Image (cartoon, rainbow, N blue to C red; front, side):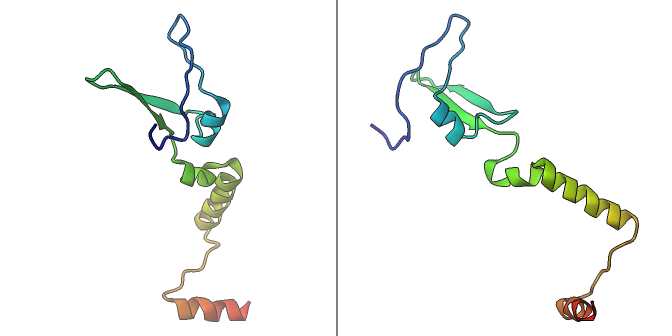
Length: 99
């Protein structure tokens, strides 16, 4: 057996549907909205399935509703001019000392 985390069998339903085990779907984030599987048929008859997520799992935090809400708040502050730009780190730290 290879170094695979999962090895087993799944049934293929009449219309070609397969059901992946819950543990595997969760680990590969295939239970998230928009998740897909890339299917490749190799010349040797092997069918490869690769998880394909609209957003990579290590970047998913950025697209949570709470984080996006915060991004919109920042955009509103920038648009309204409620920001301060500093030329360098020392200026930034000096500004913090005045607050």
